[in-house]
Image (cartoon, rainbow over all chains, first blue to last red; front, top):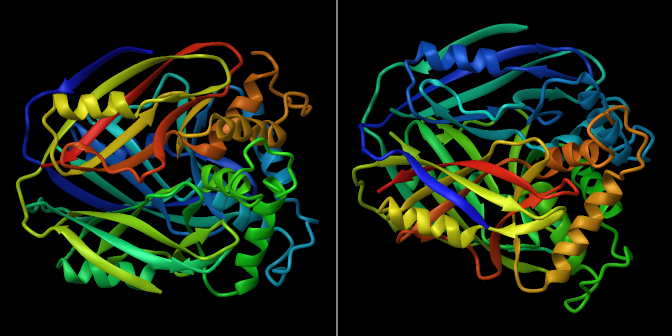
Length: 152
Length: 152
Length: 152
């Protein structure tokens, strides 16, 4: 099954880490691409080869890696999540609006912590991949992330 | 879209790692908050700034980050997962009880590996965030996690 | 609730990192176990104790940790994902075949980035755990992963 394994970097080099914060303004119920912003931060801390962790500090928005070519893909994903966590699902928790509990469920399904390898100072994404914040609430929000880079 | 990016720590400092195990007793089908225990472990290994990885070594329980204020949120999440993986779903795998296969599916959807940044020796969680083990089986279990810290 | 916490490694030791690529050929809509291949790569870079990150560079296949004993478990998980993202779900994005949009949704739900602790040069998995690539497309594909190891 394995076609091949190879090693990008054989030499051990001195490791360092950098941490930062990224705050974004989301539109309601939508994807927001953040790959460009992450690459700019990696450049600002002089990253070379290593690993970037993005941690979103919220419970009703999440992180994902998906394609960024056909915008229909994002709409279909939002619809699929709506079907799994519908606004009229009869949820107990309703004090913060009928979009709040579905947003928590969608966040559990998609996650708030994400790791992406970094090669030559840039996110080592596949051809069709982009990193997104998914806003699950109906209205726009400010969302804060902690960035953690470890590498050379 | 970006409001601001800033760097918490600009100086490279010597990195180290620590590994440990955390074993907890879960109640059946419930959330168990472990943030306090994780912070105690971070303190015991003298962690400062870095990244904590929690890896749950099981296939029918999982890890998540969610709010810890209104207990209804946890009950609604458990219900949502039940709807996605119902006990009467007609699953092939039934030897270990009708709650076992749904527990595997819920584990796939929510994940067993989680990363949380650490700042000043404590989990850098958002205001409303807590780290949980979700027990997906009906009965109580002992669940074992490997903890991995890398940082200063 | 806590039964016990202990530390596997108390001494700070010099950290290093290695990066590599693993390319596999998947069958259509199936699980592919990659734990053996990952252990071979860890051995080839002389890994001891640390953390392995696996990042799958695609948007219609994903990574998971699940049991590898009863093959029914894998079939049931594939069925559960089909129910959440059915081929006849009325998706907008259909240019690449009716299995493509469901594959994107399943990838969002299960994730492309995974971390596993490494102890004594091997994946520190639980008794019943195995690492899998899940191919969500109907046909076979070549899938590429970036491997990142940091540790001693």
